[in-house]
Image (cartoon, rainbow, N blue to C red; front, side, top):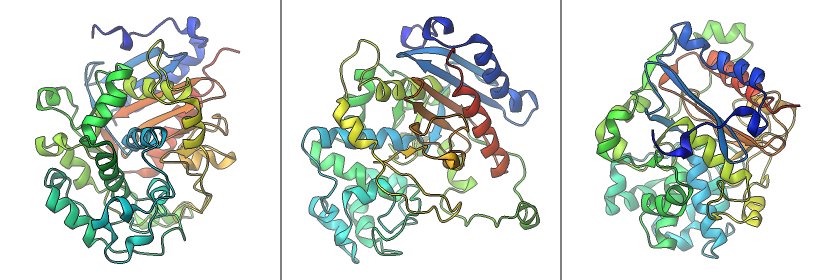
Length: 387
């Protein structure tokens, strides 16, 4: 990979402790060494540069990974640009922008509720390949029905709300969603291995989604003092569908990003460093970032019971329950990010200036083991700054 964007600097030069970094990398490769994961990739960055970019198992640094819901940060950050440009207000009714959406009582849904998963249609179906057919897309929006009153509760919307945000981006920017993301975010940041809608020429580089491990039984959950989370659209079959050419082409705004761990870490560096990556152009103003990363609600998560701590599209670490929001025990309360199905990790921490990207194509059927891995990796990454 010739692009210097992806070449790691000396960790010490970025204020990263080499011993702590090695402890992180040892933890990252643990499941590959044990034979559970076929491959994984990790990147840690600070001061706009990579301090480490490593790949383990049956892959190398040139390989790309599906990051699934970590894509939501990129789609959300695209929406922030409309706000910054004066083209969007989060208090607007979605139906005033997309009239077709208003059917079946959805006329009161606001733009902010799309970002914060409080809009009331968490399981609304959408066939990803219909995105390219405008009539089918709009008919789908019109057909959706509310599960509960918008704004009255929080329930994670795996893909539905982000489809609508992508539609809003197209209408207000007058650009195709994938084109807007590329022209306003990916190309200016120089992230040449980040795709939201991946061209066929790059598909050979993508590591295919592989399912590993065994799911927990009801008895296993009972031993943990928990009940199994309800099934949603993020099924093994849905994730494996991203091994298909047609699906890889679709810029799925809630989960279709394809990239390296380095792209994730560097994208978050721009969010940390006043909207810039290194000496590049300012993408987001500091004022935009402050506004976008403000916690909008603390409604309880229906699965874990902890306050959701949601900003405009991202999660803020918050209190000591931050590990249940996908962060490490050692992240600061101000850390922000968004994980992805199968154990993808992406966050930035203003307290240290560190950002982390972690990808794997091995999707563990045991969600508790997967969650513990994510917390363990994040906890080690968050303390890598030299004392």
